[in-house]
Length: 214
Image (cartoon, rainbow, N blue to C red; front, top):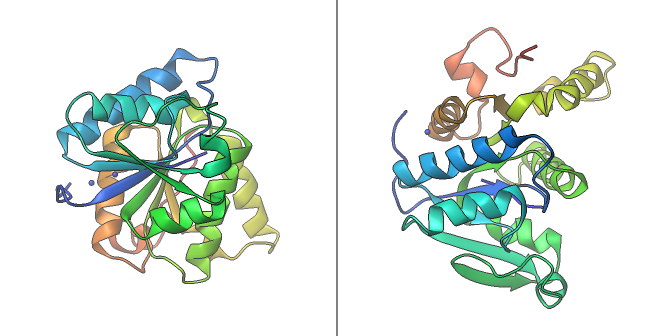
């Protein structure tokens, strides 16, 4: 239930947060692309903060980084850690009282968020971050790694919410997406260079950044 980042190299002192569930999905592309993400974060010397444990896609990212000498830290609610259902955490583990405080603590550490395919916990994290950004509680870029088009229907749903005036267009611009690891990291790096404004304003003036690739 947890998160993860750019053209210009982010300094090694900075962290990206990765979010995903404890599952790996039924398509080998999910795991393969997630491992590629971990490999690229190591190459770019980007540190990882995630939701703890060693399972699911987030565990695969953390494993790849940690076992290749990268820096990793995990935040996990104490009531989950004591049950041991997610296995041991890679790197340093910090326990918090709830998911809310997990995201709260991570938000004070990381420079950007990457959301991987997942279920309810992933959606909770994504919409928490979007809500906080729309309320001015953070200005960190949020990126969806849209592996195998996993987030296509979610993106269509949010586009429809904008069209029907249930969601503001500026909220729709608070996150970006890509099918490709390198492209997503490059986009996040550009967005990180201009905190408080949408990536689209700088990279693609006059249009929304979040295109739906069909």
